[in-house]
Image (cartoon, rainbow, N blue to C red; front, side):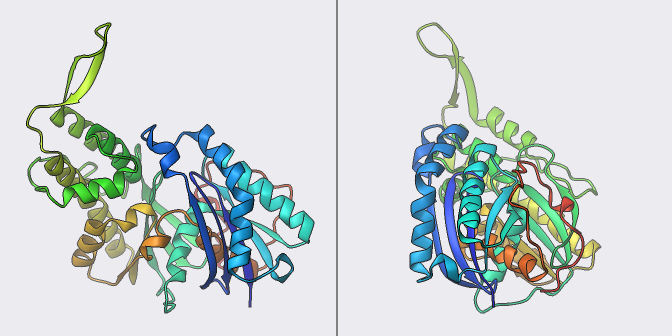
Amino acid sequence: MSIILGIETSCDETAAAVIIDGQRIASNVVASQIDLHAQYGGVYPEVASRAHVEAIDPVVRQALTDAALSIDRLDAIAVTRGPGLVGSLLVGISYAKGLALMSGKPLLGINHLEGHIYSLWLTQPLQEANFPVVVLIVSGGHTELVLMRGHGVYERLGGTLDDAAGEAFDKVGRVLGLPFPGGPNIQRTAEAGQADAYQFPRAKRDQSFDFSFSGLKTAVLREVTRTSPKGPHGEKGVTLKEGVSVADAAASFQAALVDALVEKTVRAAQTYDANEILLAGGVSANALLRTQIKNTAQLPVRYPPLNLCTDNAAMIAAAAHHRFAAGQRDSIAFDVLPTWPLSRLSHAPLDA
């Protein structure tokens, strides 16, 4: 049995969790910064770092209290090493190193994207993956298609060439005047709209498994906004065109983005003879994506519960369980990796 404390501070959530055997959640505490960043329409890195500094100790203490465990009962401490915002990552890693030095517990640096994948291992009852599987990771800053042949064995099939899906949701949300974060607010607004009201482009309709959402974002901007003088000095401003239906624009944009994700993911699963499709990351909470990919794919599709789609520390500890069982122990001297593709992880299979 393994008892692992996970710590996650890659972006704008300060999180800590205790996970038993990589699958049972003993505690899962998340301090969100959404209200702090809403005024900027996106994550402000400096604000995020300062908020992590204030929240990290209370959050970790609460996770241990909720699990009814002391530090000496832990087998290891796991922390997100990357990818993510440098300042945010440094807060979590520095705290985890101090905790490891104080307690003498082993420390593991975990890839944030691998963590999102292992959120699927926290669903109950536990369902082991039927490898090989195709994984679509769709979070705020990442859109990746990965072939997973076993625990710890990843092959990148494709990914975004510009804006990630989550970034596109946030940027289009700002264009439409919706609150941050864009994903849930666009989905909520789209429920009252017509998905065929605007014929937005489905980008990268080629045989690759790469995505591009920058053109889609620009198409929405051109279709629904106009540039006009604004302000005392005549500076230009962007406003919605008269008569534009925000609900229709949201529904049409969402449909175009989801179509691209579903088409490439299903085709990748067919090409590589995958037995399952796994969805992970914040955008995997999108109801249209879940419904459309299940209706299109000719094989099982699984995704995490809503509370494990967004960033959390439970997924970090779950990923760490397999690496800890396989013998991974990291030097206390490791540094942050703000860009850390899954393909750079060891391709040696983890037997756990």
